[in-house]
Each structure stands twice: as C-alpha cells, then as structure tokens.
Amino acid sequence: MLTGNNDMKPPIPKRPRRMAMSPESAPLASGSSSFIPDDIIFFQILVLLPVKSLVRFQTVCKSWRTTLTSISFVRWHLELSKRTRSTMVLVPRKYQEDRRKACSRLLSIFSFQPGESKCAELIFRKEFHPYGIPVFSIPLHCDGLILIPCIMGKIFICNLATREFVELPPGSPSVLFEHRVAFGFDPWSGTYKVARHFIRSYRDTLQIDGEGGTTREYSSGHEILTFGGDSKEEAWVWKATVDPPYPIKARTPICLPGVFFWSALKSMAHGKARMMHYLH
Image (cartoon, rainbow, N blue to C red):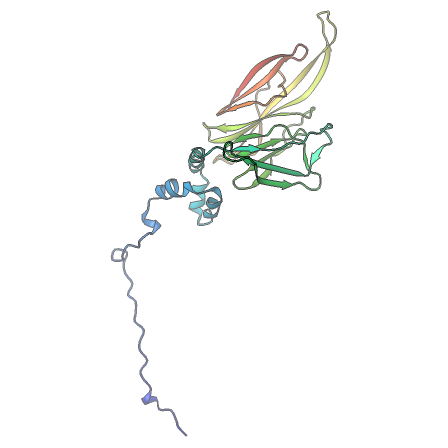
C-alpha cells in the first residue's frame, strides 16, 4: 500500500501581495466622474436626459437627488425641453346634462404634434373607483403639469413626465358648484401657484331704479395654494388673500408668469364685465 510522503509534495506558491498605492501615485482612472466638475455632469450632461432617466438617477445618492430635484436644475431642464418640437396636450371631456350627479370612471390625456401626425397618442390614463372623477371644467397647463378643476370643488394635478396624479387639499367651501381656478408659475419665488375663487354666500335684492327685478349680491373669497419650492412650510396649504370686489365669471383666467387675469362682473343685473388681475 502506498503511503503519502510530505517531503515529496510540491511547494505551494505564495500569493503575490498587492501594495497599497497612495492617491498621488495612483494612475488616473479614465472616465471617472470624480474628475468631472459637478456643473458639467448635471447641467450639461444629465439635463439632456428625459425625466424617466432622471428619476432613476435620483437613487444614486442623496446629493444627486438634491441636485436633480432643485429648482435651478428643474427650470433649466424645462427651458431646454421648450426648444424641442412643440406638442399639444388634449384632455377630452364628456358633456353631462346634470353636472352635479355626473362623473367619469376614466380620465385620458393625449398628445398631438401639429403638422407631424394625424392621430393623437394616448400618454396617460387613470381609472377612478368606485365613484369616479367629477365633471371638470377646462384643464390648465404649466410646464408639463396639468391642473384639472372639478365643478364640485376637487382639484387634481397630473405630472405627465413622472405619471404622478395627486389631489390637492380641499379649499374653503363654496355655495356654488362652479368655482374658478387659475394655475401658473411664479418666477420671483420659484414656486407654482394655484389661485381659487369661491362664493361664501349670496342674496337677491330688489332694484330701486323703478325697472323692477332683482340683483344678486355675492360675498366672494380668494385663496392661493403654493407648491414646488424649496420651502416646505407653506406648501400645499390654502392661504386667504384679499377678497375680490366682484364675482368672477365662468371664464378661463389668463395665466402669465406671476400674474393671473380674472374676468369679473361688476353688476349681475346688467352684465357689465370688468377685467381684474392679481399679482403673486
């Protein structure tokens, strides 16, 4: 029987040791992001990516998420996006005779490029269960955000890039179903503003000019909700402003950067319209 002999075993080679190198003597790694300024990485490279890719890059680290969600980066990304081809956004509405009881189980948003396509493309769809979404007035758009004001008082905001769909906190109660809403960006504060007009109460009074009939007097209110800025203290909270002197008409307001133009009625009996504006 053969027996093993330790003296006859071949020697085991020793593993070569790797000597630690100091940062000064280490060779430069080609393509390493640590040698590229952050301004170039974020504001010249990543800013060219679509929103879906930017959302994934937010998980790299906390500092990346802070920069990618900062007001300066978001505004520069929007500015570059505006230089590309323009796209129309369509939000179909279904007519209902009794708007107080009507609702829709499905909300669809389409995009359309004039001159380049003949058919609209479905880009967002949301189902509402079990009651559906109430009938809404004309949607408002700002920087890729769609604001949907419902006649029953609910207000929704949809971010088409991230597919986020949220409901705003309820505002002050209104005795009328059709409240008026404005939506836009405030360049001075770097935030988005949602302005809302509502009716606290109203009463009918007899005219004293001898023509007969009645005139309806309103007690109107106005409030603003802010979101999208760096400060979280006043975000997503309705703040009361100066009451409008006249009730606001059922007309879509004109929304400019920092300014909302409302169309108001001085007299409900004679139907004389006046233009009012609010600075935010």
